[in-house]
Length: 549
Ligand code: GLA
Picture 1 (cartoon, rainbow, N blue to C red):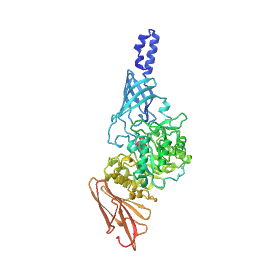
Picture 2 (spheres, rainbow, N blue to C red):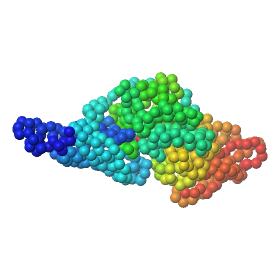
Picture 3 (tube, rainbow, N blue to C red):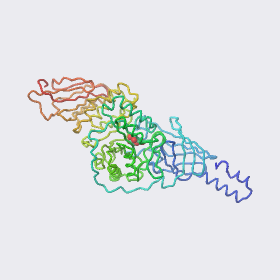
Picture 4 (cartoon, protein in one colour):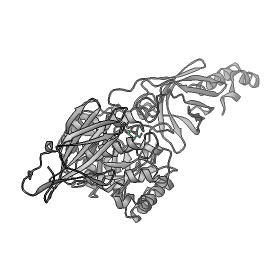
């Protein structure tokens, strides 16, 4: 049934009848017709939807393409040719992302340095509804895949009205910020069941579990769609999601999973989005519960294609899953991921959310981390027990920042009481990475049971002193140098307003949490030389006894 065998000329030679010749020509042109809606599948990867149009031998995609959120996920539109049954398409560079959208992987603001990604699809038409192709990415990686013709309704699902809003009851979970590991920062969607099991093993053997890290979260990349009854299922990389959960539980850990309020997730390195929970919220929540999952990261992605962009629609979409999770009866931590749009910190808890992303995706670069960490200080007052601002997962150990920068990263996240989701390969951590991720004194700031807002004591040029009151009448004090040269930074001890007050035999005690040593509290001020992009982090409290100022 290849089109090359049924060209009009061959048909004419074989069949003298003019009528049959015309029929063959019609069949050939019908088979060669790429006009319509297509799903591009990567084997064990995501699916990207395109509306293609053909003009002679030229083929291009029509924008917006549909359910992946436009242009087939994070790629740009497609342009190319169909010649003698051979299809060649390339992605055009992606258009600028709408405000609030996650940065495209590999693009400016995304994980790596700014670059234009061109993906090439080459293959042969199998029949009128299928073209087998291989896809080659900018990095030269090739993935087998296929284009499959789909009905318009599948490519462009109807928009829906959000449900009426009401408050979903608090699930009583995540009384301190959740700690764990998530696959995305290191692996994107190129990981599998064995990787996750390896990470669970390493969580225990490295000491991370003892330090408090509990959740192993499988981010985008695990599903292939739905079975005949509509239940969500794993793909070739994740053949048995229940067995994986059992394994992680057998290590004394908890496990998390990932989905979207839209029909598809965003799209990773392999390309295209994976199945989302749109219109299957109750069923998916029950499936996750039956498999034994303890945590759900729920990522907006293609939901922008089915809900309007209002805050109410956003809240409604998250409320649906919040309720569905509660109905399962299983304790499942609910992690909202919609990049902070509509000031989610003001309403995320009403959807049953335990944590909500406040920013676009973090990259393993100083500027990206700095912007997210310091940018969260002003909204830290919205963080409270069971409901946490999430400036995105940790990059510590991924290699893109210096040790000083990673210490600043960890210090800021703990100062903000952010969820601590390690995003590195736990199986191969250097001692330095371990010392940053597992510093018990810094983690203790994060896990303090009394959330108080973070405040600026001073901001002078690129030197900033940031404090947070802790339980037990103590303070965390961070002296941050955002500048490119070492800086002397000071603060006055009496700027810390202790509830107890300083009188009689009371005195201050202060501990440098990175040097693991006490610092003198004599004199009016504390001064430290802080390296470029570095931090000095103190815990200051009151102890009975003579001394101090
Ligand atoms: C979004 C999220 C990321 C990750 C990816 C997966 O960009 O913000 O954390 O889950 O989707 O595609």
